[in-house]
Length: 390
Image 1 (cartoon, rainbow, N blue to C red):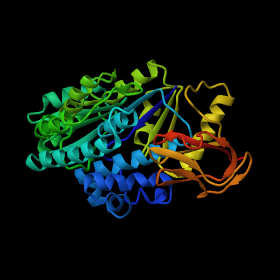
Image 2: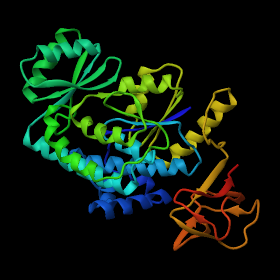
Image 3: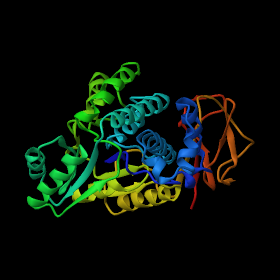
Image 4: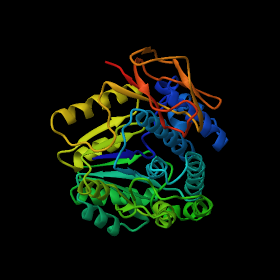
């Protein structure tokens, strides 16, 4: 069973959108810019490392990048059994699961980034990763420190993040080393996230959450606050706000996903931080990061190989030689020309139209059939045509 996981702040990198700018899924970037009133394309293509370190920039850029990757993966027909995301990634997971619309997801993430930036500016804080020390020992190090410092992320065995005031972080780091930590690494962030320092941001974000339509997700989404699956919209109204001042229980989330049956963990978005955490935490699982278009083909090959060698992969998984062309919008489908079975389709060829939108193939291959009829009303991401690329 497949779990889609989504990275949080800290995974971003300058130019991370470059490989996607000619891909059909890039259209989401324009939509995100319209909704947020920000130049998201510039964030994904032109922003430098310093600019992307700013919370308001990194969160919006990472969320949209993850949604572009998700759209590209969904075009192949792969469907997950579960969703989960680390911190900001939880908003990506909820959007992927249909609990929040893409437009509302963009608006919420933009507001979350602004709220957390404001809280960080009001109360100076930072974070550090403690390596090689058990969770309870890290908690003891924080408790022994005379100052404001807390555990912020339970990421993986021997990898815990602490957050608080810079002075308290320095003291807690020394305490952790005295308890046996192998290393303590400063994290270049602009605030003490997932601690009481974010109370101001939580209160501001609650209004935006209350004004957002939250639906029942089409697949269970596992929450950061307790590491458990939740499907009730009312649960998420509380969890999304509580997340800002509560530690991210990612290690617990991974174990609970595995116990629920997840054996394939796909990280969708920039970087491979979550892939590394899954490898450290779980045994006998397949862990794959997808951040560039070429990774999608590698993903299909990996899943096909897993199936051929006896691995169990549940969901709508196509073999590595098959591709789906999906609708870019809601509307009535009209096929282009008179293409028939086994006709060759090149990348960028017009397959048809949905309303005023062209449906162009992101792949080259032989047409195996149309999956929508002439005059049929289709929805965004609904399969339109089926290609074979062997």
